[in-house]
Figure 1: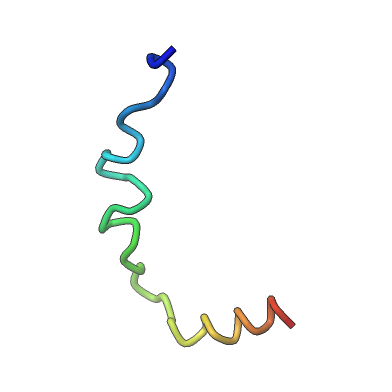
Figure 2: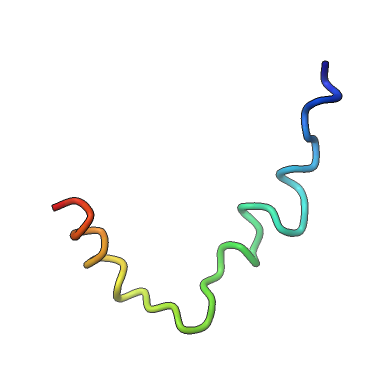
Length: 42
């Protein structure tokens, strides 16, 4: 039963919380985040 669980999902080099996944790419404008959040919620 435990063999069906993917043990390495959170520990790989391309995991969701890895540094490469959390750093913004060049050209990302953080100034667009608050207006986008307001647009979604209003």
